[in-house]
Length: 118
Image 1: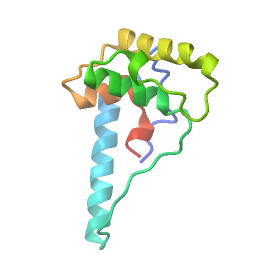
Image 2: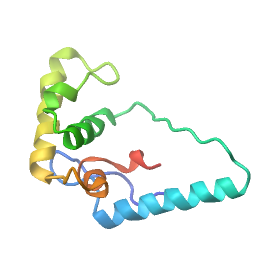
Image 3: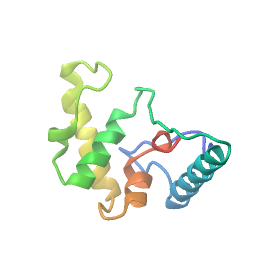
């Protein structure tokens, strides 16, 4: 289901285009439907825990309207002295990309990443 080699740096550009986000979501839906046709009855989600807590915080901040400082955490053991920078990155990503909190595909494309749909 790879749409591109990697997501864009949300601090300087959108994670992906809207077209890429839509394709990725449709691919995941088709794949899930195929698995269900083949008898899979239980689906779970997981993540690698590597470099995805920043986009996760940007998504949560956008959708909830909370300030990044309220939703950013240390992730996979980020040193606490680096937390202010991570908060700033999330704030810049939201300011730069202007994701529409009423449009989930827009949020995914602008401050999410490919790992949110794989």
